[in-house]
Amino acid sequence: MPKIVDHGLRVGDHLDFRPSDNVRVWLRRRSLRYCHHCCYIKPSFDFSFKSSKVCVACRPLIQERCRATSRALYARVREQVVQAYGGKCACCSEQRREFLAIDHKNGGGNKHRAMAGGYGLPFLLWLCRNGFPNECRLLCHNCNMALGIYGYCPHENPPIASQ
Image 1: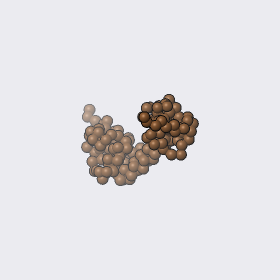
Image 2: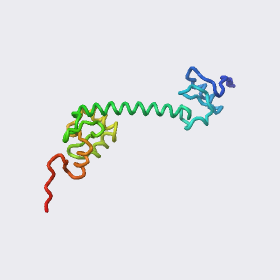
Image 3: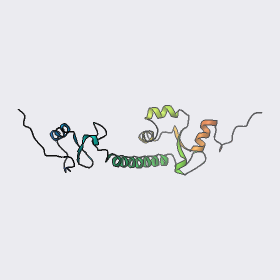
Image 4: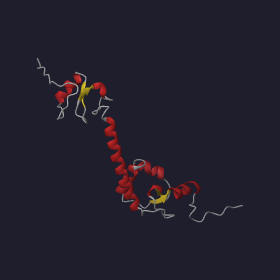
């Protein structure tokens, strides 16, 4: 007959170590869980998912830390891409980072982004990994939208309207 072990853990106990597999099984049988963030033993209903390793009280703290890390990474990679493409609009020389966007010279941006893994950070990382290809350039949003909608940029000579 297997030996029954009472680990002596209760709700609210703080652990200075990660529990072993045996202790985690013991906790689950008693509807208790260990939070990997705050290191406290808590009832199972304090965890939002069955597979969650973090209690609902700690989840917002971790989410905010992850968001801050992601924002910092995005800003760093975007700055690297902007610098690689000259740091200003190829048409009107706008330099404010908030106004700049990546443009595909020959169109086909949707297909290219789908192939590269999506919008935002995955696309910027793809540009970095592939040596900042010449098929892309940096344009301000005004020039980029005008090219997409009207087929020309207002900073260039607009086509003469026929009457």
